[in-house]
Image 1 (cartoon, rainbow, N blue to C red):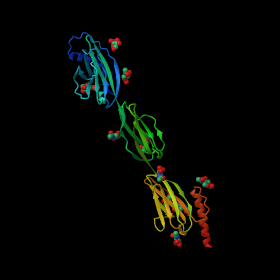
Image 2 (image 1 turned 90 degrees about the horizontal axis):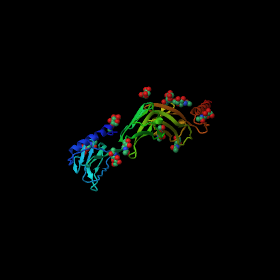
Image 3 (image 1 turned 90 degrees about the vertical axis):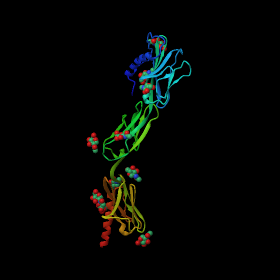
Length: 338
Ligand SMILES: *[C@@H]1O[C@H](CO)[C@@H](O)[C@H](O)[C@H]1NC(C)=O
Ligand SMILES: *[C@@H]1O[C@H](CO)[C@@H](O)[C@H](O)[C@H]1NC(C)=O
Ligand SMILES: *[C@@H]1O[C@H](CO)[C@@H](O)[C@H](O)[C@H]1NC(C)=O
Ligand SMILES: *[C@@H]1O[C@H](CO)[C@@H](O)[C@H](O)[C@H]1NC(C)=O
Ligand SMILES: *[C@@H]1O[C@H](CO)[C@@H](O)[C@H](O)[C@H]1NC(C)=O
Ligand SMILES: *[C@@H]1O[C@H](CO)[C@@H](O)[C@H](O)[C@H]1NC(C)=O
Ligand SMILES: *[C@@H]1O[C@H](CO)[C@@H](O)[C@H](O)[C@H]1NC(C)=O
Ligand SMILES: *[C@@H]1O[C@H](CO)[C@@H](O)[C@H](O)[C@H]1NC(C)=O
Ligand SMILES: *[C@@H]1O[C@H](CO)[C@@H](O)[C@H](O)[C@H]1NC(C)=O
Ligand SMILES: *[C@@H]1O[C@H](CO)[C@@H](O)[C@H](O)[C@H]1NC(C)=O
């Protein structure tokens, strides 16, 4: 807040005394009876302000002053500012009109009316309001999980806007404190997403801007399912991994890397990879490994393509399924030996 200090107000009587010496006075000034009353007028930046002043007799000497000087003395314009003019709708009116008000116009204005015996003044304090506007906000950022992150949001406005932060997705959490800075220590993957900065004052609707935080983390396989497949049919093994950035997938059969060839096809889209066996044959049965990799790490899981008739007790526990497949495999080899 600028310009509403006591010092500014105290300068006015001095200015007035100076003005009285400058004004062409017919009569000697006997007493300076300064009767002041202050009114506030509030105007939005860019609007027109009208500071009202009326006289009881049109022969009285009148003037408008601001903090630093005389604006009008009678009908004479002293100010060079083209935005300033008198607003006279009657002979007794001596109002001041300021167009396209700006913040530097804020301050005290004095209408001085000099009658035969004393000077009467009306003081008007012009308050200029400015809608909130975000001037600077952090750019979208990508960090690794565990990093300390500071977001900044700066706003202008009069009165000074109140700044609040909110995590939009996925938690919709409001942050306490009215701060330009939002500190997040040891950021987690759940804290990634859009953050909203809101700058609000009573002048106009709040200004809102967003910034996105991307939190990198290593892959975690969230879905993989062993399946039973009939020879001569098509079969698909699926593997889903959450990761940021999106992982690369590789598939292995036992220890051999699989390429999309010979009736096998790897289809990886986003978090999901599918190994498609176009025409299942005996050699396709067995142990497959899905490997998900991004720059922060690598993980894998094993899944199985079963012969039909294998008892599947796949309740999500791959180890359980593995032992069943092993059992089936050993039995198969046992039979072969005989
Ligand atoms: C100031 O003016 C008001 C009316 O405009 C009057 O009632 C009041 O008595 C005056 N005060 C002084 C100190 O002259
Ligand atoms: C003018 O504004 C100031 C500061 O906001 C306040 O203290 C004062 O009471 C107001 N005066 C009037 C007459 O509204
Ligand atoms: C006061 O008026 C003068 C003349 O119009 C102008 O140049 C100056 O900027 C004004 N000062 C304030 C504080 O409004
Ligand atoms: C925004 O704030 C940042 C950090 O304080 C600063 O480096 C940058 O220069 C600012 N940008 C603008 C346009 O003010
Ligand atoms: C994050 O901030 C905490 C507390 O200020 C500090 O102990 C830690 O070392 C910082 N971590 C990083 C990665 O800078
Ligand atoms: C699958 O492979 C078998 C043996 O190679 C072949 O006889 C059969 O026609 C194939 N089926 C399809 C749908 O390609
Ligand atoms: C990929 O994983 C991320 C992080 O869990 C998730 O937000 C996104 O929705 C996933 N995308 C797909 C296509 O499943
Ligand atoms: C399947 O293959 C993976 C990778 O080669 C291996 O770690 C795992 O032990 C195998 N599982 C069985 C049941 O053989
Ligand atoms: C799967 O992960 C295990 C343990 O981290 C590792 O020993 C193995 O080599 C991995 N397999 C593949 C095919 O990457
Ligand atoms: C799967 O079944 C086994 C044995 O019945 C049980 O111990 C295990 O908790 C189950 N797992 C899930 C994910 O339901």
